[in-house]
Image (cartoon, rainbow, N blue to C red; front, side, top):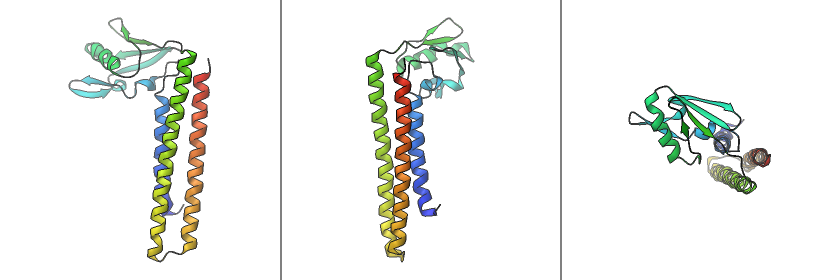
Amino acid sequence: MDERLKVYDEKMQKAYKFLEGDYQTIRAGRANPHVLDKVKVNYYGTPTPIQQVGNVTVPEPRMLQIAPWEKSLIKEIEKAIMASDVGITPSNDGAVIRLVFPELTEERRKDLVKEIKKKAEEGKVAIRNIRRDGNEAFKKLSKQDVSEDEIKELQDKLQKMTDNYIKDMEKLMDEKSKEIMKV
């Protein structure tokens, strides 16, 4: 791959990975430890991811269990989950914290699908912005004795790359939407 295209490929790859990570945090009615990825616990004054202060497991399809490495952290973990946008009330038995995921209603599923499509659209806009930046940079190459044909070829390759990433994002969106709508 041309070095001049590689920069834009890496940026598009990051946009795709960001969308993929964003989708993992969406609650789909089943317990998924990734919904806690953005939740930070106050661990001796430092915001720390839950996965670094305890063991997160999935004992049942609709339950997450958090076993903190220090019992004193139970209240802090509960507080962090309550303050987050996870939308589930934690319960504890003094040793572990349990998060029970309720069954999603049809209306909630449709709302989540709308959110998924919105995030995909934002991802596609990011990809298109990267393409625009690339095209502008390639146009400036004509001042550096680069032929019109070579610039056109770079722009065509960038367009193909853009089309592929957008197609991949749409595929990701369709898969996540089907997963949400599956009862």
